Length: 141
Image 1 (cartoon, one colour):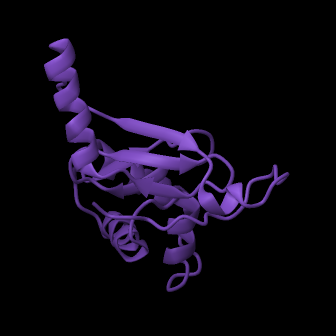
Image 2 (cartoon, one colour):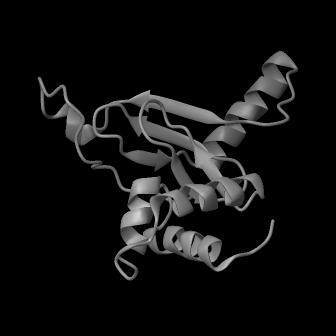
């Protein structure tokens, strides 16, 4: 992948945002300093950075794709109401893999875990049906 100024700006915006951000959030971040930064440039940059392995594109249930810096396997819990995302701790996934190996003689070569449910904040608001702003914090492993 050829490194361009625009791709570097997209990458750095994701770093500043802390990951798990959408193309719209990245565009908004870039437009804070460059108000006319093209959305199409963000999408092209995300596509190139993902293809090069620098980013991970997480398709977390319904809704927009979230992008984060590539760093090993990715395991997530996603609230189906607010869209909040949590990382699932790697040691929990390792325990699952060991169980599969020991109990079923199944040796995982790649593991991706996606758990969809309702977060605590959303579960405390009965009857709420529409999407809300994310309430979960992004928890790093």
